[in-house]
Image (cartoon, rainbow, N blue to C red; front, top):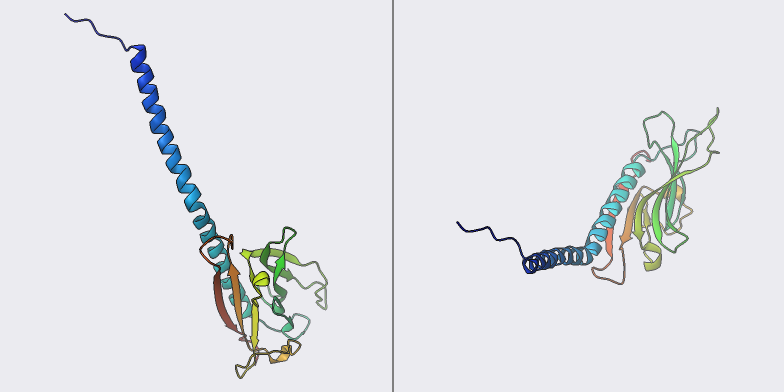
Length: 199
């Protein structure tokens, strides 16, 4: 009868070495994947954020209507912001809405939404604006691209942005990129909205 042979110290060292080599190869592969794919994942996130932001803006802009205090639907227009009245929720009040591109303290740009609810009787828009970020990694300002372009009932572009009563249609443009220095290049998203309640 043959005696069972125990595991020698050399065999143990070899097995530990093989295990460490396999583990190192797996970890290196995972780290390489995240380094090469990290930017693509961030870019995809920025793209989804921009698309959601544009979809939100289009849906709300289409509902522009007279304010609860009787104010004209459009308050002001500029290339980087628009202020108007619309019903953004299910309550009977009409909110004052502002969409705007802003530069943060770290010189990043974001696409934001501000909402003021009417208060009192008669209603007035004197309360604080509740703001939220719709999209990050925005590059409209540093690329010199207007976020908002306005058109009258004949389809002509409105160049005098004080003529809020002429507005019937607008286009929204959002330029996003996690890092403009790296490829892929800047991504531009466009959509448009007709103001249904203004004739």
